Each structure stands twice: as structure tokens, then as C-alpha cells.
Image (cartoon, rainbow, N blue to C red; front, top):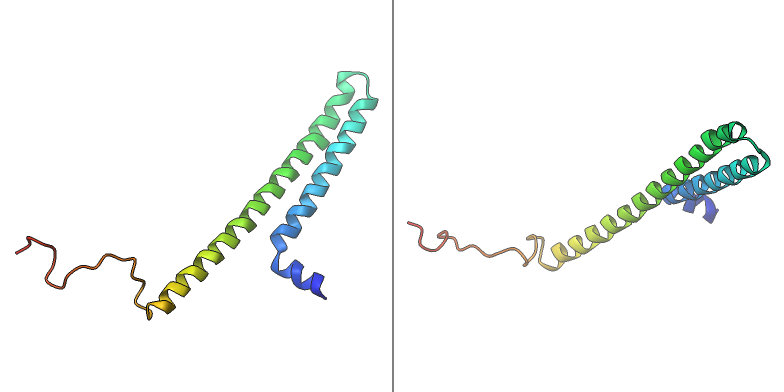
Length: 108
């Protein structure tokens, strides 16, 4: 039950792990095919199919993992921002510059 809930909340990390596994298996199968072939013309199909697909799958995995990390960081920043708003009474925070009601200095 907890695994299903984790997969629903962390779908991008689970997909990244699956893509990484598929990419590594594809690269290993391509390497095994190339190592058995002696002529370069026999090796090119393995490089073109398994090699490129494996690298693409690893790139997708890395992108999904970074996207999940960025989403976590944005969630942390939103929590910090809501804590600041709650502490300051919903006014937006004391970190904003205070501008006098009459306007900037020296203005007519």
C-alpha cells in the first residue's frame, strides 16, 4: 500500500529509475552485440539501435530526476514563503523596503 502511494507522489523519480534501467540494459545488449561482431558493418546496427536508444533513455532519466528535485525545491520555497506571510500577519513579509506614505525623499 505504501509503495503505491509513493509511486503516485514520486511518479517522476520512479519513471527516471525505470528509464535508467532500460537505458543501461539497452547499452549492455548493444555492447554484447558489438563484441560478437567482427566487421564494422555488422557493428553499426547495434550502435545505431541499442546505443542511441540507451543514451536517449539515460538522458530522459536524468531530466526527470532533475525535474523532481526542482519541484521539491519549489515546494520548500513555498513553505518558507507561507511561513513568512503567516509570521508577518499576511502582509507579505518585512523583507520588503518600507516606503513612506509621502513618497520618496526630495519629491515634490
